[in-house]
Length: 464
Image 1 (tube, rainbow, N blue to C red):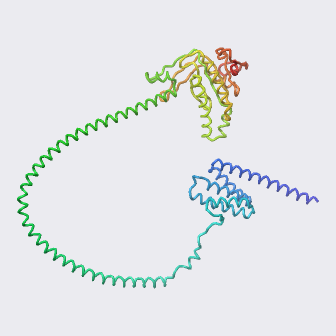
Image 2: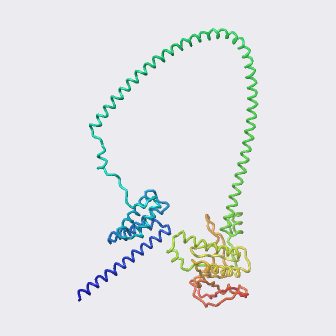
Image 3: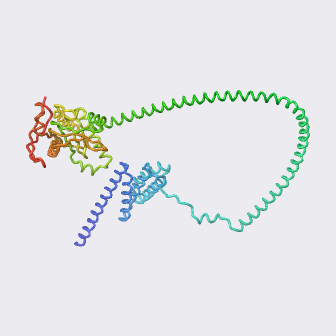
């Protein structure tokens, strides 16, 4: 009885192990199929090769067959694959079909046959082989038959050559005789022509003097006409050259004006309009002090975790989309974007041209930013705002940067750090600059690094 129980427990544990192993293989197959759907062929290929090796080591033919099937799909569905890779992919599909057929998995075999029919035009899964050397060896003639045939061919060719030479010599003799008769007739004709030439020489000699006089007159007229044409051509070439130079100069001026406009637009994109104009006219921009400016910091929650789970292109695309939306919001509220630092966004109001409602416009912009992020499935942000004096100007020599400095900037950054996701945190100074229509909620004080205790308030949508 005890032996039966032990045997039962042994087979039960083995079954559990095989079941867990099968679940692991199914999970691996699911991952590879997902990579195929995403067109990540390089990683999918490595995973499918690992699955084939695992099935071979574990002596699981169906797992190995699944690996060959997935590898065949990867090699045939990849649009960038070479012809050699596609042939290898078809071979992998045939190997997979053979393994599935041995494992009596008719559904998998039928799926592979459909794919092979689309790729090759038939549903064969056998691998074609070249004919063996033993079969071809029987068709090779022996040395004796080759020598006899060669000698017969040589003798036949020599006979034909001798016959052809005799016929050719006869034809050449007849042609020579015909040419001699033609030469005699030609010589007689030449004699007659010589007599006629002697008679015409006297006439030609008399006409030569007349022709010489006409030639001299014609040469003079041609030289005169040539000189006139040369002068006209030089004048025309000079005119064309001046026109071409003028056209090229106008084209270069247009290019210069176009590039100047582009540089002006680029300068206005990275610097405020007044600062850019000062930089163009004076070659430098003077730093200015402002007694009342509002600074905003916005930072995304969980950006590092999101960055580790996405590829760089997707991450930068999502970040660019969010920052473009922020740019449009601050443009609508007549604020000035200062810079972005990683996933942190910084802007200011009340500069470079001072105004009195910068705090109100900055808070409205912050509320619009949070409203936008409610529709964005990827980001949530903390926003901190503080108002106070700053110094602003352009720093750098090769790459101009417009920036702001002062405790106001540091306090706005500390308020963002101490804020809450989805809400707008402001300081006491900013709250005092807001109209009474804004609803604020006191959130106590917090210890700001290198600053001390700071009061904190949360802002909601302004009341009507």
